[in-house]
Length: 114
Ligand code: DGP
Image (cartoon, rainbow, N blue to C red; front, side):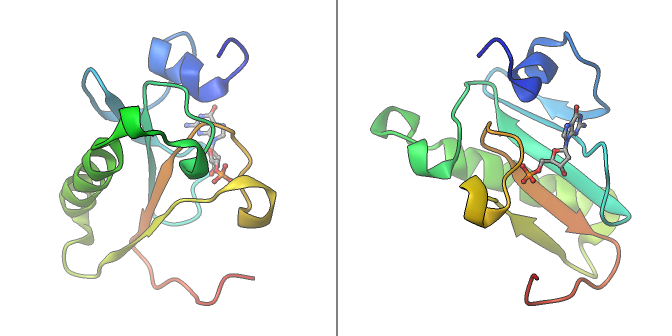
């Protein structure tokens, strides 16, 4: 999608502090971190949100979550743990309409969300 900021990060036309990339997914630090560790994982393919995954995307969520888990450990969250979040549409607090997984850690996080 032309005006999607995460598509631009995936294409390399907007810079990001990348942690990982392969042919299908990308991980990079969040621009406005809410915890000492806060990074995002996205598919390269423009999928607006988790509700719009289709049968052709089988395996993609597993791939995102497995990499999220691996990177969380690499980023030092193995002992303390982390939060793995997918916001979806207005009620879910999604602000960028390109499917992404947040990983937050490095401090104790409150629950429930406001
Ligand atoms: P959400 O509210 O779930 O849609 O989260 C979107 C996140 O994306 C938010 O934590 C801030 C982050 N973000 C927005 N624009 C950029 C950007 O240009 N670069 C990076 N690295 N992160 C961004």
